[in-house]
Amino acid sequence: QVQLVESGGGLVQPGGSLRLSCVASGIILRVNTMGWYRQAPGKERELVAHITGGGITKYADSVKGRFTISRDNAKNTMYLQMNSLTPEDTAVYYCNFKPPYGANWGKGTLVTVSS
Image 1 (cartoon, rainbow, N blue to C red):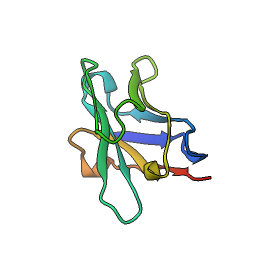
Image 2: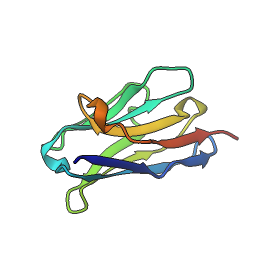
Image 3: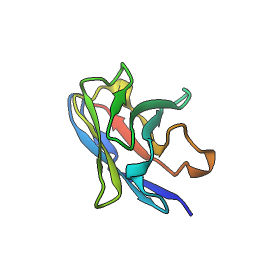
Image 4: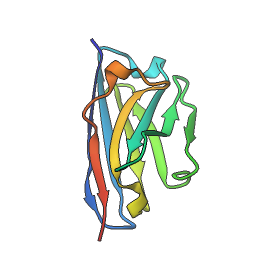
């Protein structure tokens, strides 16, 4: 059974940083293409960044240069380092396969960027 558990969200001021974690069980992250997604209030869920099994990364234009996706194979954990946060980054952040499997959406972790 696949389980993806996100954590690391919180309240941060504009310009601040957060690191999100996605702990996986039931799958091996390094052989899958995985993504970080987010859903802002009143908006559809969107793909923020993804990383292939080979370690190739890609980012949405809105976060390019500010966010970094990475993976710790030993811990079977994926990360999203978020820097220079703006209020527009406020959302619930989720990890999932890319493309996503509906059954694997977790509870997500809420990121609120506000002064």
